[in-house]
Image 1 (cartoon, helix red, strand yellow):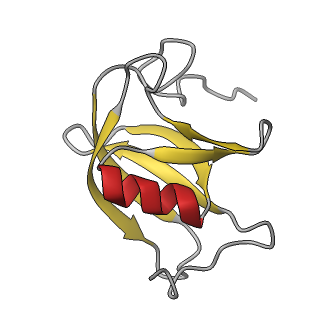
Image 2 (image 1 turned 90 degrees about the vertical axis):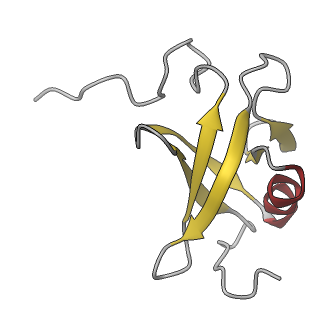
Length: 105
């Protein structure tokens, strides 16, 4: 089913999550084949936690689910772009996006 995709040596692929309406980049997380399958089957985002070594459903405890509109993959087939309708902030800090800090020189 995912034969075109190139998962890394740990069976993971990076997934960029983008708001389908605003086009804001909300977060980046890792997926494995199982979390991708659950995402496609449920219509909500599921990811693989590298620190906890388990699947997690975005919004499962917070209620800030992400309804999937579309899943795309890049030209090298080694990264995913997931377009979503968010039901709240993406970041665990409460920020709309995990990319709210600017790197200064």
